[in-house]
Length: 410
Image 1 (cartoon, rainbow, N blue to C red):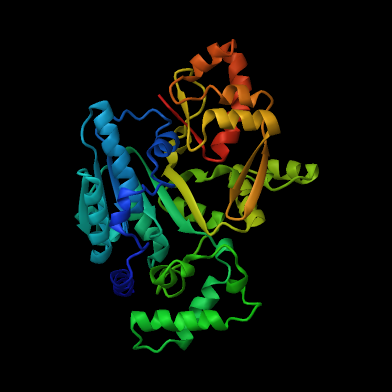
Image 2: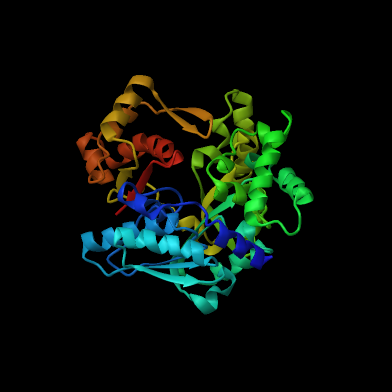
């Protein structure tokens, strides 16, 4: 089955990327956005003047790789620190060529490319690593728990992981259609013939078909590589939150945070006071499982995880006046004005529109979050004692980290 997976990505490297487009944009997302990694795995306190080593396990055509390598190279230049290393590991030579061309287009010199299976990581690309990313890979292994164990053993003493796994509920309709295609597919069909047959079947699906009715699935509309990965993959599975916890537990790991946190909070979806009270009484991971069931649109799960014995200490908390809050993609002035005017933060994920209430006075605090002032300096600018400020800031911090738009650093 590994051979079939490799052959797929040789024929259709995924996701489809054009190295020439690196001149126009940097694809950025979660996990592996460096300020996010620092916030969730190093309590915002990682000193990037010291060497940082990362592994992209199953790097594909390079989205996570290029994002992380670019930020690390810029960090080295800005701080005058060492050149950090990012190791790329993937089965597909065709995918590697695209990732290499993208790195070359950006002038990135901090990447080491290796072709091979993550199951052989101990031999091909041994740790220790400060950070390991594995996005869209473990769910394509015959035994995902073995793959995760191979990666976990390569973590350094303070290392952590960024993962992406398919979500069961948001992929409603995918697996019956995969099975139907296998029933209809000639054994000798070429990859091109498989794609053509799949497109013919899609055009014939009845209105009531679950795949056709699922508005959250779009990869088949992005090109042949996306269609093949979604509907013609020889080996994949999806996970619920409890199943992810079970998978992590097999390697003595725990989730530090699911991204975006508010999507895994049932209070984001419930308005009835009695229902909210019942949901809030559940243990945290059960709340995440409930939120997933209520949401229904989570076709992927992005999360950070760390060894169980120190997972609780990984995330940054606003308990130190020296920590500096920084916003991601939200200009402070515009955010402050919106919070003051509406009293809420409105966000949309997939097709889910969430209206999250802002705490009183949030706009005045948000206006001072410029990525330079630390929490103590913001408190002083507001004329508040540290204790007064902590009480005022905590609800805003929860709101903005909940939508994954604020990170702390030293």
